[in-house]
Image (cartoon, rainbow, N blue to C red; front, top):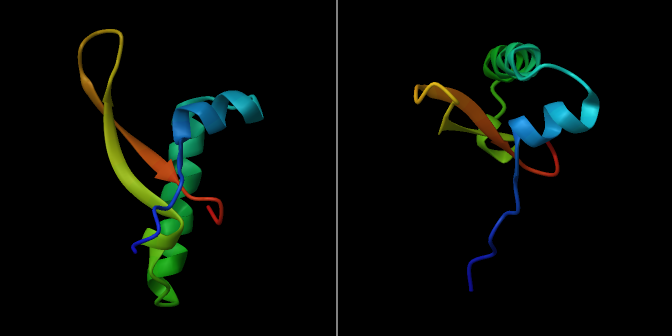
Length: 68
């Protein structure tokens, strides 16, 4: 049986941390760059996704695992 990884959206994480979502996305991208440099598979931490903002535009967000 395949285990389902529970995630939380970066939008929710930003709210919990009192950060803007834009700043959190910037930080996640920095982590992703660092993971790539040291050859760590980032899918165990962050999974890129999208959401529709209040203007109806698609924006990037991340689904974050417990490790993320």
